Amino acid sequence: MKEDVLIQIQEVGPRDGLQNEKVILDTESKIKLIDLLVDAGLKRIESTSFVSPKHVPQLEDAEKVTKIIMSKKNNVNYSTLVPNVIGAQRALQSGAKNLSVFVSASEAHNQANVNMSIKQSLSQLRDIAKKAHESKSGLRAYIVTAFGCPYQGTVPEKTVIEICNQLVDMGVQEISLGDTTGMANPDQVSHMIKNILNLLENEVKLAVHFHDTRGMGLANVYSAFKSGIRIFDASIGGIGGCPFAPGATGNVATEDIVHMFTSMGYNTGINLDKLLEANRFLQKKLDKHLPAYMGKAEAIWKIINRNSNMQYIKI
Image 1: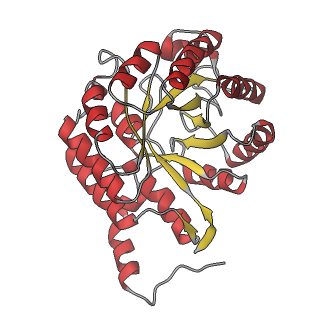
Image 2: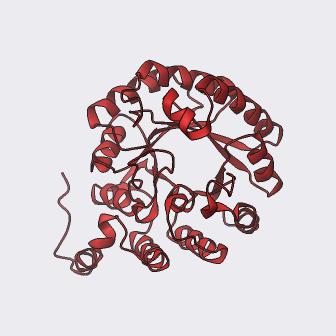
């Protein structure tokens, strides 16, 4: 095990994953899913979003979910997505200690998503950041469509960097670059990350958030890793998608990222067998096959685990 490198997974399935599912899980099932993820070793979980139930009914129980998980004393960093100041107030009143905010790097997508310009969104984010600082809450920011937009196509890297600088000025502690509709390629990922890491202050962490729409999710994760990233957003089962981004499919699956890094000898602190248990639970609740490759290959994984003569080749 390459102990000097720790891979951190930000699990977004309970939020980004469930928000795009036709089957709406009840609160008890959501808590059970989160508990299974915690049992697998995940220490960072985005549990829900305080969006309008009118637009995202899948997460209408945000207050209930937040109050229940925040009552657990398990040393897990739970975060919740807030779209505006009202959402931030609801989250804080429910006991949330870590807020996540978002802005698009594409004017067209930002308008479609929140009916505001990027400038207007950043102004609103400053108000949310102020509330987060006053309440001593953690603050994470997503820059969505950072690698391309389904509406306008190419997104200038310069725009992404300018938004990063403004988020740093607000006191954001972590920035996640989002590939909302899976348009990124490994070379693009490497180039952008290296440029942004050169600009960010040391105290601001950089993460990546890839969707697997075009089958390049894991390739992009590896490219980001080789470029210095150690924090990766992922969704159990590979579920997810953005309701306001045509063609967006699920996030790169947590199981697949954990398997890839584990097979290369890196430490994730996550038990893959227990992740697959969460996969089975979710598959049953959603009543469908999930996109995660490891969920489909579970039988082979178990054979490899049992047979000491079958080992991964370490280079």
